[in-house]
Length: 294
Image (tube, rainbow, N blue to C red):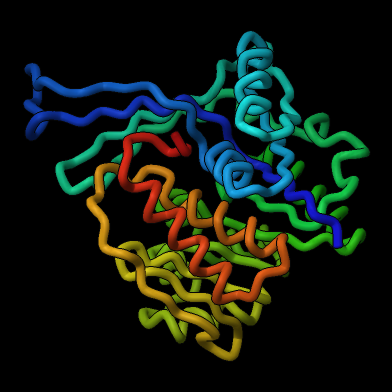
């Protein structure tokens, strides 16, 4: 079995804002403000590498930032396949944290909006056993067309495909049915509870698994503090709880889960072990600020 994982998704600079109290409209509020590397695809790639997987990461960044990002990802054990954009800067995400660790986002996707076919060279699939695509890549015309071509080529080569829907807000804008049509039949879906409910139209996770399992061979639902579940069109296969930890920042917890799960999957581990590894990584991620392992 080919052991490499190819991740396709966004590169962002996360600007994380933790106000001391409610925002005062038209005036000041003290806050802790930090910059961190981020982006759903980038986070997943780095967490995968931290879990021991062999990872390629394809994305688009501002041309002036390309050498810096290439060095950064290599330093984190990720092989970067980056294209530089001469027109748009690298993406930026502003995250507003409330005292519970919950997040609200302001997003400027920047160069990510220009991801195109030139970002996927002919030898990109060499040794790849699984492609993981962030849902953000489907929400703009250019990246969507490029990624759909990648998925078509992957299917022809027999390479497994995983999709992370990434954003309930964007899913609501385009509609769940259209998103499912864009994605097509794939092997793995990694969704959180809100995404699974929206995409399936079902309230109970067993019914969500059955509904989504008709399109996605394996469905993983990330349930936050309640753990996670993996299943198929036949319903629940395994369900595991999450450990009780102090939550500081939930940014990247889902990406960390995917990294832990997929890394175990590529080692040939059983699904319950993959689920446990994903939950452990997600639990670790919420205990510090930022979306990538420290």
